[in-house]
Length: 387
Ligand SMILES: Nc1nc2c(ncn2[C@@H]2O[C@H](COP(=O)(O)OP(=O)(O)O)[C@@H](O)[C@H]2O)c(=O)[nH]1
Ligand SMILES: [Mg+2]
Image (tube, rainbow, N blue to C red; front, top):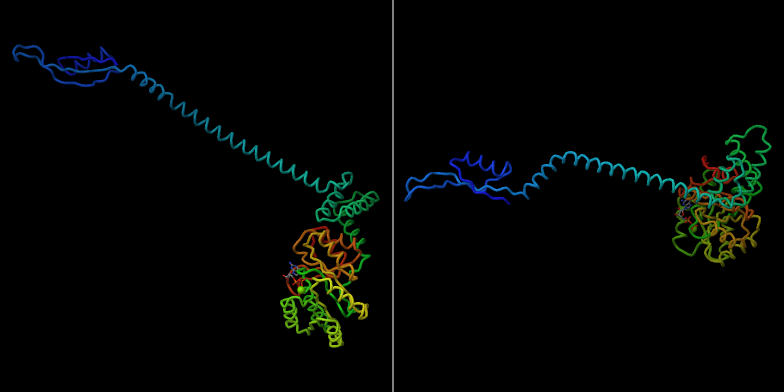
């Protein structure tokens, strides 16, 4: 730091001197009035003493600051542009990443679809046939059947007199499915058999379905209907059927042993329809039911195996195997409202060569039930139009 003491006769003169000696950037550190000269305290002259300094180091930063200041607008503009650019770049990058993720997801989806359908040998089929077959496969129709339907459709395609439309292909598919199912029994209760026995695992909807069937027979067909329950395992199960019996004003007999059954038969001698509810939880009960079937005029009893379509097909298959010994006449498929895997119905019908009596579509008694038909199953399989 360059410090100078300047003595001048007046303040303006002192300032001028400071400026001359130290330049424009000098700073005044101190100023005071001093007296110079004279003799024995007399004749002294009043002067101004100024301590001024020039801090070169300080000047440098000052200049720098100035420079900086001058540059600041440019700089901040640049900074802003840089920031904006970074922001835009990051948006672009995240957009790009999003696009990349989206296209990766699409790719994964394609791969999953092709993995899911990889067993299907349908790549050479016309597109409309392929999309119809993929839909059936999505509904979990067995690959063997998908392929079979595809081959029949291809044959039709080749023999078509004009270019088939997508709708043509869907109609063919519908017809072929119906055609393949009509060989099985899709009759519901026709009153040729008085005793209708519902079997199946707990919770599939046997009791609820019995209530629906009873309401239909009574209210729509004016039949005399009675209930027998063999589901004596839980009080609640008996109560459940008793509640429906009360609601519909239907008599009910609880059967614990074969004699009880004979008694119930006598009691319901004049009735048109006797619906039998079972627990289906133990083998002995099933054997008992089977014995009943043999003992009491087989022609007069039909046994329906109730299966919830919301179950895994493998599990349904095991249940069918377990109940096979009962001479199942037909299936009842329940809880179709809880699944999209309609293909299981077709698979089970074909595999076990049994038709379907009813399909239930919800918990509401008596409304949520349909008499099954090949057309209804084909409609479920082919999507859009649910019966
Ligand atoms: N979503 C749906 N639920 C059903 C259907 N049928 C029965 N359920 C329900 O399944 C449960 C078990 O029914 P239940 O008749 O007691 O079965 P069970 O043990 O075989 O006699 C009940 O909550 C019913 O309301 C159906 O078609 N769809
Ligand atoms: Mg029950």
